Image 1 (cartoon, helix red, strand yellow):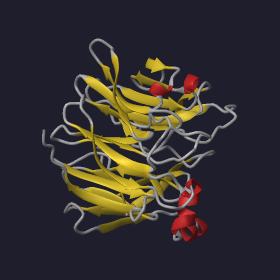
Image 2 (cartoon, rainbow, N blue to C red):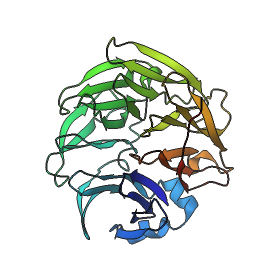
Image 3 (tube, helix red, strand yellow):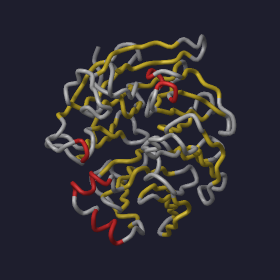
Length: 335
């Protein structure tokens, strides 16, 4: 199973193209839905290596405040209401957004950032918005100066939507918007601003550099004086993040090998980094990349979206003895 979303009431996971919910922190699961994907896709998804190579399975899941569940899989957006489900959007290019490329703001508006290879940079990258509980999706903005969108996230402290873009220096940036039509950047034009996820606190915005070919850092932006700091060097490109009720912040790094033709001196492991104060970061656990080539997937750690008290949920992928393994447990922090 892959963990997707955690709240104080429930845990949402997927296995292949089946969606499950747990009301007891992962002790038992009830099947909610089987997504209506093509027979060929369902068949190929039963073979783990093919599934890895073709990037099959559920990419994102978000339960909205209304109770609607949005699921991205098989190049489509599925809208689930109780026992009923329907396809409400199909992607013309790419497999859909990255894991933090879907969000809902405080008004109930939903956003999806387009992610596809776009190697020649000849195609505009779209940001989609839904104002009717995920039923209809319209392009709210298009971008011509980026390769793709890495993340679209809601900031509960400012009420803004934040977006990260990549991949070349001039294409990397972190921006915020009220509604998605116009954007203001806090920084761009450098790998420092290439990120796949953001963390929000009252005083700072945190992110990790997704820079496979150079030293990556955990960074932060001060809301008050707009100062940007490089806080800690980490062992690889930073993928995803989470923050727990007790204030512990988490970032995961991936194992990509020479994915961009050259590589910094990584240790071929995926790590979880943690901090209580945001300034001091510690490497708390890691797994070695498995022996399969990177065409079958980079080694990585996917955090559940959301949290419950100190309870942490995450899934390890393409790692030695821990491929597609999900974990739920408590994380305590000692000075």
